[in-house]
Length: 307
Picture 1 (tube, rainbow, N blue to C red):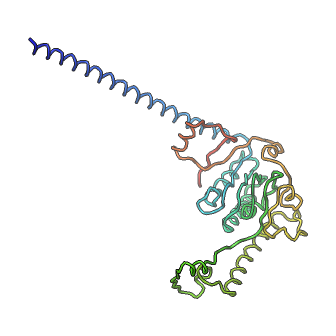
Picture 2 (cartoon, one colour):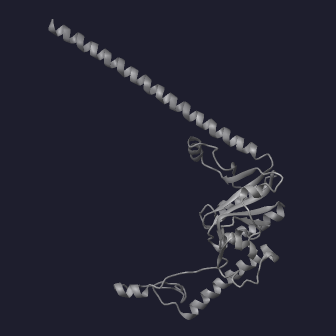
Picture 3 (cartoon, rainbow, N blue to C red):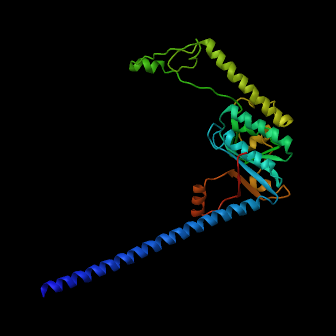
């Protein structure tokens, strides 16, 4: 009798366990289904926003292309990232004006020169007003890059200039002697280690390096003079010395045309609609944007594909 009661109790417990397990399984399936629906909704949100951005690009607008950060290989402001966006903006027939949003301390002289050349080439091929809008900073290679635009504006407190070239190293010989370390260096070519921080810089090699940066500086000056022309106050002996100035003084020197900002400047054109041209985002980046509040940006966006 006792044995039958135990069996009955066991069967009841098993039934309840199976019932609970089925219930949990159903809730898990339901939870997965809800997550699946959320993902599908996000995908449609992203796709819809991208489609709307493309439609926005079809109406007349001012194309905004950013030149932000150090101008160097692999950076956001590198030739491979900046020029395709600039070309996309020039080729878009409804981009009536090009704004280059400049905020950079400079960088590679070569990459800056290539950007300068690209602006000149595109201006000839697709005649449109090109305006450089300086925010916090546009110095050295940044100014080299934008010197050939039609108009440069900045805020009164913006930092502008630094028209010069630098090449630096360290003389670590004293430190090496102090800690008792000697360098072993083999070269093929007597000047291969010309700027070795652990060796002596001869007067001959120093002069060679100085000639090198002087020539690079001369190319920089030529690009600025070609772009700014008679606007420059070349009576100022410090103009090309590598000094920087605030926006107010930059206007007096002819480095900047006027003090303004991107919003006020936009009002001077037939359309004041600003559309920022950006590097095409990966699907994962688009999902993150959708989750974090897609569309809450200062400018509308248009994805520019590399061509």
